Amino acid sequence: MHQLLFFSLLPLHTFSATFTALCARHHLPFLVTPIVVALVAALLLSIHQWRHHKDKRLPPGSMGWPYIGETLKLYTENPNFFFANRQKRYGDIFKSHILGCPCVMISSPEAAKIVLVTKSHLFKPTYPPSKEKMIGPEAIFFHQGAYHSRLKKLVQASFLPSVIRGSVSEIEQIVLKYIPAWEDTTINTLQEMKRYAFDVAMISAFGHKQDSEMNGIKQLYHCLEKGYNSMPLDLPGTPFNKAMKARKLLNETLRRLIKERRESGGGGGLLGVLLGEKNQKVDQLSRLSDSQIADNVIGVIFAAHDTTASVLTWLLKYLHDNGELLEAVTKEQEGIRCRINESNRRLTWDDTRHMPLTTRVIQETLRTASVLSFTFREAVEDVEFEGYYIPKGWKVLPLFRTIHHCADFFPQPEKFDPSRFEVPPRPNTFMPFGNGVHSCPGSELAKLEMLVLLHHLTTGYRWQVVGDEDGIQYGPFPVPKRGLPVKVSPRKIKAG
Ligand code: HEM
Image (cartoon, rainbow, N blue to C red; front, top):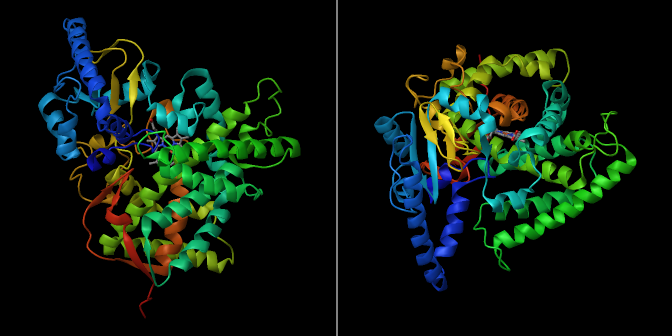
């Protein structure tokens, strides 16, 4: 189960969700008969599919047992080995059968590019229905074509460097609210980073104006999050059920806020952009509906904060473990601090553009940690792919982590070595933010959040990991065990 979560993607689509859904069903004894029927049906379906595909050249690989496929193997082996072994045995494109779905795993940059970029129209994004329901079916992640590109333009417009450069001081204010409170205490790094990234996501979504509804939105969001990675069992009292109720209330709150904003004509952030206030060409008829706006605001906040918090947690871990690097980053940040103090001003966007070493440390963290280990697509029709045949409906998984850990592109891949980014990586080998039409519109904001936090943390503080460092906690993203508890103390500046 844990290993499975390790490979979860955006919290939106996890293998685990599908898995827990399956478990929930399987553990109920009164469903034994339907299970037998389902197994027989699955067997018949497999025979039918085998007959249908037998003349075409499917990718090499094992489909394992009927219905369960290779699921048990994925759970009982280290997932890194699971993928690496198959890649070694079958090559960069191989088939498997996981959690009831036939799938094709892609571990070459060229093939991943075809799926995500050049032939992206043939591979649609795919998510478990429970996730779609919880985020909202009209959110950007679930769409392709005209509606997707319309939304993408709007979301991208909210997170362009020219827009987020104006947020540096607000982001810094948030950092300065959190860090001093950590002094001389032991913090759970992941939890604190989540709080930080959530606050940044909120100002990005709603602008700097604090609406009366903000606190309510925050609380409902936390409830939604708790149920998000739980079993999708909609029975009274389950976390999923509570989350669905919170989702309904969140929708009502957002609709009230949308109404207020439409009437007042004010407000910034993504919400402002989606309301079309800044675009005079948007007439009444072509406006996005309230539910389209609500689903996308909720979706973007979701995508923005857990991902960023997980990477921030790894950043602290790697800097903690690499003392010399921490000192070198501190030196770079002190140079900036000196300039800021001399001209008696605050940290600016331009300062963040002059942090080359810190930026490489972030890049190397994104590569090493690969918090989004892969993504899911589904073939929309039978596809001829690199000499193979991918049947309609099969899942296709570009394996980001496998590509990021391939020694051909990143020599000594397990070594944490930011200097490898002194030379740009080969095209399509470094995809922490995805690639193509669905690539991440929030990448610049995420990096900005990291730079601002590291500026204050490295120049003013040091942190020690508390307790045994015992590996990785898998879920929903891979992060250091127990969320990396650390004791934070003020930095002692050496004399001379
Ligand atoms: C370090 C932090 C982050 C990482 C590693 C990350 C990674 C990714 C990746 C890999 C994808 C592509 C998924 C796919 O192709 O299926 C993606 C999509 C997305 N991300 Fe991020 N992300 C991060 C932060 C953010 C932030 C801060 C925001 C919001 C401001 C954001 C908003 C989105 C959205 C809206 C999409 C969907 C785009 C689409 O479907 O067209 N992400 N992200």
